[in-house]
Image 1 (cartoon, one colour):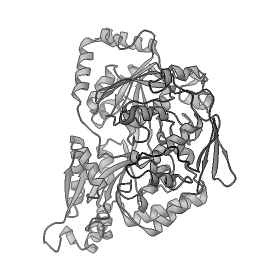
Image 2 (cartoon, rainbow, N blue to C red; image 1 turned 180 degrees about the vertical axis):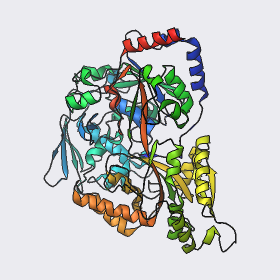
Image 3 (tube, one colour; image 1 turned 135 degrees about the vertical axis):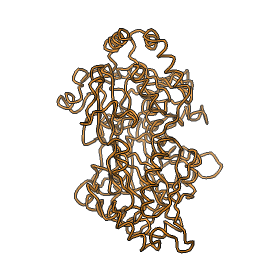
Length: 609
C-alpha cells in the first residue's frame, strides 16, 4: 500500500483546534458528555478520508475505516508473530488442491449484511459465496479504476479477460462468468489460479477482497463510495468530512453469535499483551468509535494529554518531553497512567529516481554518487531515533534485508569519485560550467518537510550538487508521479503483506507509472527473477532470490534508501487490549475501554485542576 508522503504532515485543522480549545475550556463536565451512559467509546485521531469503497481505497486512513465495516474471508491474527492469517468470514482455512491452483472456501452460515435501504424491506440479507465472486469482479472492472487490481492481475483464470471486456462505455456485465471465480453452492467459493500464488492468503486478508453487496453498489451508484454497507462489527453513523467520523456497533454482527477464540495464541501471548482478562469473550467490546481529523501532531498530543484521545503517536517535536534518553517513558507520564508501546514497522521511505529522466535515468554513476552522498544517520538524529537507516530495498525482517552498509551507502569520498566518473567532477556540469542542479518533487510544504529537505541539500552540497525542492500540493504531486514528470521524488511504501515480494514488485517493469513502480525502472534480469519469485513458497530458494534481487537494485540505484520507521505509541491505561500491528485494519474489535478507569482518571485530573 502506497503511503505517498514526503514527511510528517503538519496541516493544522481549524476545526480540530476549536474542538481542543472547547473541551479544555469546558473541563471535566464536558468530558462526561462525550460518553453515553454505560457506553464504551473509543476516541482517536484520523487523517482525511478519501472514500469508503474497498475497490478504490489505497491510503491507510481509508483502509482502516473500511476494515471496521467490511470483512473478508481471512484476517490477520491479532497477536501471532511472525504474522499469520486465520478465518474471518470463511468457516475454516480453505482446501487447497495438490497443484496449488484451486482454493475452496466454506463461508460461515448466518452472516448478514447490515440493515440498509438497498435491501428489500431495509433488512440486510445473508452473505453468500456469490458476494465474493462479485466483489473481486469489481476490482477487475476497468470502470472502477481500482488501485487493487495488481493483487489479482494475471493470477485468476478468466479474470483478465473479464477486465478487458469491461473497457468502453457499455455497462460492465457482472453476470458474465469468470472461470476462476466460482460459487458451486450458496456457501462454497472457489478460486482457480493460473499458477501458484503463495501470497494469495495475504491478499484475501486485504480490503480489496472484502465482501460488498451488489444491491448497495447498484442502489447508490456514485454515492456508494460514501455509503458503505458491510458485514463488519461497526456501522458508519455520522461523517463530517475533514472533521469527524463516527461508528456504532452493528447489531447484526452480534446476532450471528460470533464469539472469537481470542486471543488465538494462548495464554503466554495474551499475558505479554495484557489480554488475559478478555480471552474468549464476545467481541467487539467498544460500542462507539469517534475519530477527529487532526493532521497536526501538536494538536493531537494536546488532545491526548487532555484525555480526548485514548492513544496517540509521538511527534518529533514532543519526543524529548515524552521519552527518556534510554527510550523509556518519562516518569511524569507513567504517573498519569500512560503506557508506551514500540516496535519496528514494515514501512520503507525512499527517494526515487525517474529512470525516464534524461539526466539521472541514463547515468548510473550519477545515481550511485548521489546515493553515496546521502547520510541516513542525520535523519536518524533529526527524528530522535524514531527511524532506522536502511541499506537496501527491503525492510527488516524480510528476506533480502541488508543489516549494514552496502556498496553505495554513505561514503563521501566514493561519492566524489563516482561523480567524476559520471562526468561531473566536483559537481560541475561541463556543458554550462556551473554546478549541476537536480530537482526533488515533494507532496507538501510543511515545516517538517522543509527541514528534511534542508538536511538533504546540505548532504549533496558536500559533493557540489545543487539540490532544489519542488513543493506541490498533493493532487499535483500525484499527477506528476502518474505522468512520469518527476526527476527525483520522495515516497513511502507501507507493506500490503509481510512478504519481500510486496516491496520487490515496486521495481517490476510491468508496474511502471501509473503503477507503483514510479521510478519506471526496467531491468530484464530483475523481471525474470521476479517472475520466479511470484510462485515460490517460503524457503531457502525464495530467500536466495530475494537476496539476488536486492543486490541488483543496490547496484542500479533506482532509489536512495532513506529509513525504516519505528512505531511508538502512548495509550491511557483505560484503553485495554491495544497491541501494535502492521496490518491493524480489522483489529479495533479486540480493544476495550475501561470506563471506571477513565472516570477515575478524569476525577484525578479535576482535582489537580
